[in-house]
Image (cartoon, rainbow, N blue to C red; front, top):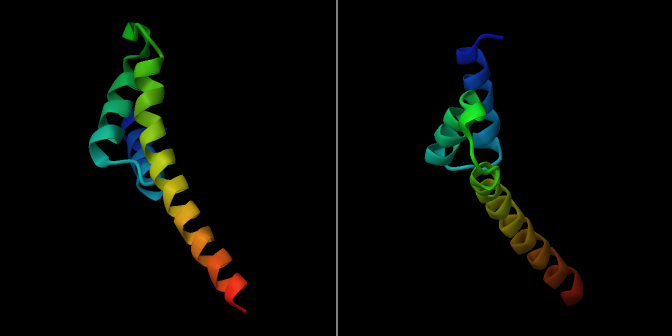
Length: 72
């Protein structure tokens, strides 16, 4: 894959994972310049943003399901 194809694929995955566009672009920039990265925490912080949003929406959905089951 070319760098452009790889970046496009990552953007698609990031969108699916609810990673904000700005964070996805920063991740792409960091990964393509990984040798300059001083601390990997900068990268992992950006990637956690999408995971937190997805987990939060899953928790909200599952709580609704539990409440509905209890009412029966």
